[in-house]
Image (cartoon, rainbow, N blue to C red; front, top):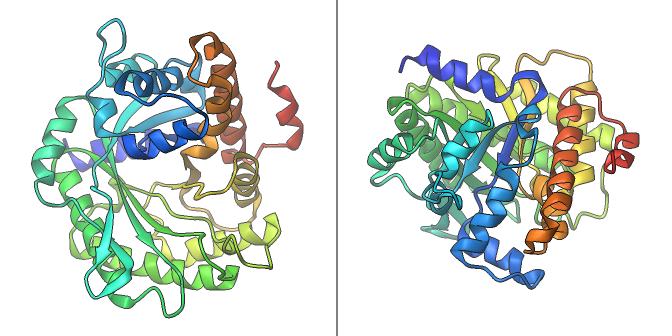
Length: 342
């Protein structure tokens, strides 16, 4: 596959305001979410939960791609159809999370570096054979007293770039996700400073590894104050700071930026995305979404692990997906939240 084909996939993932469902929680993480609602967690119940999203009528009108996890991409529905094929039948591009998670960084116990490069080339070959056409790798950067260290930023940027180069070698479009966490007490200004430094390091590393920017997507955090910060910024300030940071540090050759929700709830993340897209000023990339919990939480609470709740949960998911797509098109209004019944 030529770079032109990877560019076509990257552009398709952010076309017409559509975005990506991040359904890549590990079984351990998803079990914790199930436990909170007293839903039994087993391979079959997790498959049923994923299948609920993947078979929502009209999903392809708002969702261009789905990031799966290793367990999910190996699963089949009750009729024996692989879930990746189920997505393709819906007109949705299958993707796969390929990192092995954030591990303690040697010499800095409070920081992490994402691992998983060993054997990645062969795993990418296998995932592509199973139907994946894009992949994702998440780096985690924590802000704290004296953090992040330059060593942490460089280590994670290098791993992201190595991963992206391997993806393009194996004909998968990489999503590069350097997440600066919302946890802590830092201000919005500190978030902007750190995020800018991280993005600068990431694109330097991508250049060093020969990654084609046209055949990838960036998945960053929005510029927002930490959860415990006493001064929370209004929606408009978050939008201005986020766009300013991207304009300074993301090359225009990147076809799309798909924001993570990063712990923001479904309403706040939707409003922020809408406000960013409504701003004037140069936006050479498509600005869309790759939300996880912000797309799933309403449906999960409707579902409760019961098949008889399938219609209600799919309606909730479909409604949220339409709202977020509207935000990616700068057309979201709070009045849309009353349209769930319709």
